[in-house]
Image 1 (cartoon, protein in one colour):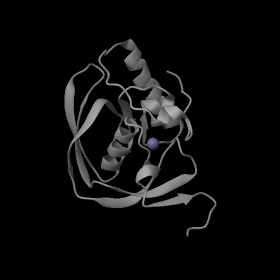
Image 2 (tube, rainbow, N blue to C red):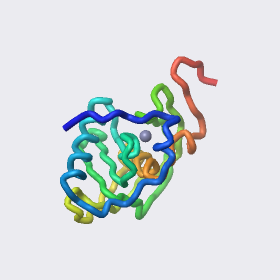
Image 3 (cartoon, rainbow, N blue to C red):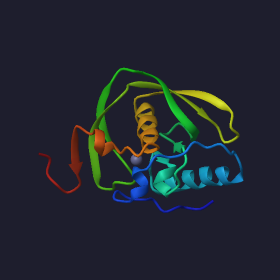
Image 4 (cartoon, rainbow, N blue to C red):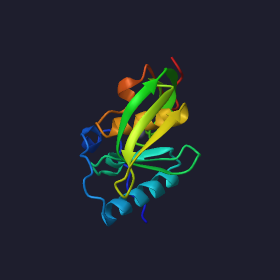
Length: 155
Ligand code: ZN
């Protein structure tokens, strides 16, 4: 396993659309493991492959309930709306108030290519939406109703 470099705002890779994974091989497993290690090292709750410079539809999330690996994730159902604060490992020092669904259902594949569904509520729903947005080059600052920068007074 290895910690990969987290790409920061301004890096073009963050704005590109990621490609669907079609080959479930050792390289994919390595990517998933490196992403989990990088996320933990950075104290994040989620990381998408473009954040480490790889334009593949791969996401890892851990909001405290254990590691979730998602390959080719898609939101298939959503319910409700919650306005809350979120941040991003690619945009250090900035947080924003973003409206996200209260609950989502996501269909994805695991590292072997098997399909499964996962339901998330509140923080997990927010993380799922945030990370899946990364796969389409969308950042939370695009959707934020208010942005807060570290060290600046709120206003
Ligand atoms: Zn992010």
